[in-house]
Length: 316
Figure 1 (tube, rainbow, N blue to C red):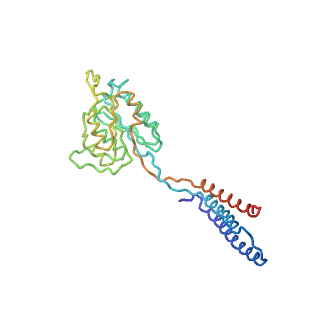
Figure 2 (cartoon, rainbow, N blue to C red):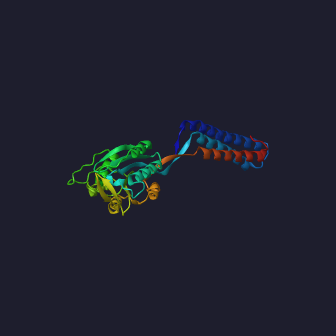
Figure 3 (tube, rainbow, N blue to C red):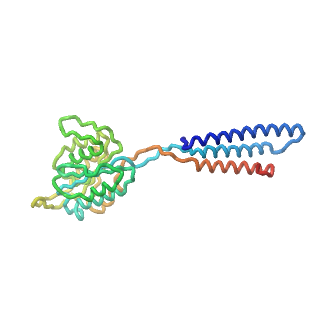
């Protein structure tokens, strides 16, 4: 238990101690005087109980005045979330209305708006390369503006997207050497990457990137935007067929402890914020006890006064 104003406890306890001393001394004097006079007063125990309840009420009020609070564990959603947004040319396909990127943007905005202030949100965009367009921040308007600016361009590199997201989370550049050991980025158990993509990978070492995230304790949730039937898009004057590739997205999610979320239509994308479970942390938060103690003190004072009145007809 903690006290917000511990100094207020001192005079309260001194007053309580003085009342206890006075009650004992005066009670003994009164008993001796009555015994010398040969008078026996009925209800002595009831009188003592009334006085005791009153003094206890004063003591509880003294503790309440000091602002006591108990530290209790409270689970809450907190940490860092990076939205990795695929802006490759295939995201211009219209198998999800109005097109994959526009639907993903709408879902990302809904996801951001659903998060509490305890979650820092950043945005990474990726195609053949990747870059951080909004660093993790509790000001979610920054992430919303970054999502609104997205445009389709280039190819898709999922491994590069994961590395860029890990860099945004940890502030450490992820090495690209495929022959070196998996880099140690530290352990980030409250960090999550949410990747919106059609899964059509055209570059980057996905396996190494996913294993790096796994070692760092970062979960990756993948959101598959598009349909397995696919659609045709125009790229540099060529018409290319593109379809959702679920296998790779499922593997990334399972490897890192996240989950794959299929979103083959706009309705499922709109509800994606409700299906992604972020990391829940437990922190100790103060629970004020003053209100309850004041209620207990009033009950004790009322009980003490009632017994005193019942015995003597006087409040004091």
